[in-house]
Length: 260
Image 1 (cartoon, rainbow, N blue to C red):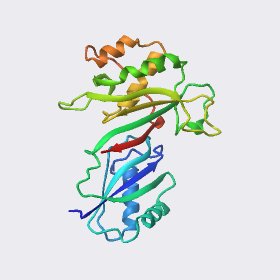
Image 2: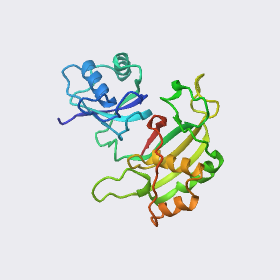
Image 3: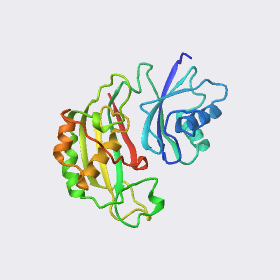
Image 4: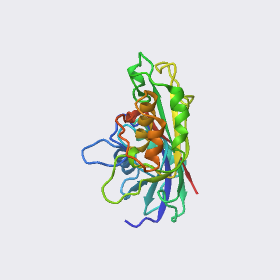
């Protein structure tokens, strides 16, 4: 299909009940649900969508940019289209904005940076209702030490120890602009633990499971299972580091994507 029109949708979703973004046969995914709804709203029109990146199972997004490619222009105003799509989507997926863009726009290659937040707590008495939103770590951790160590990831480093290793000759070098831990002021609810934290990380690109494994390394450091020099040596490519704690997916949120 050669599209004549391109629209960018900013898609917000809670990923807890989905097997990630990308369509998978026999699995419930965000892309699959969105395409099914778009085909219902636009009967008879071929529909193609492409996201700025894939999210894994249970991962959420505040505003995932998704290109919608069509042969013909939308048969209604963009705002009316947004409302009609939302009316037919399940309540854990929403379209925030719709706008037409130039055909030269590339939703993947034109990304300047992506920012992820990882929300977590280790307080006793963790309420099950918080599980879709907050990663939980049972053992005590030194939050202060984790906060001091988080900026170690900033800069250009080798992240081979902090990702699921893909096959072939992959490049593990990435540049991290921001890596910090703050008090979580982004989420609040009656069932949330009293003290929760947000790990904030920004880069122009991430490897598979990279953020969750970076959080895992910080948790291991907070438990005394790693030392700061272990992390530094791994980032410099001087040693391999075994990350035995991978943060649960449900605490991870794609917060924002910035374009040129």
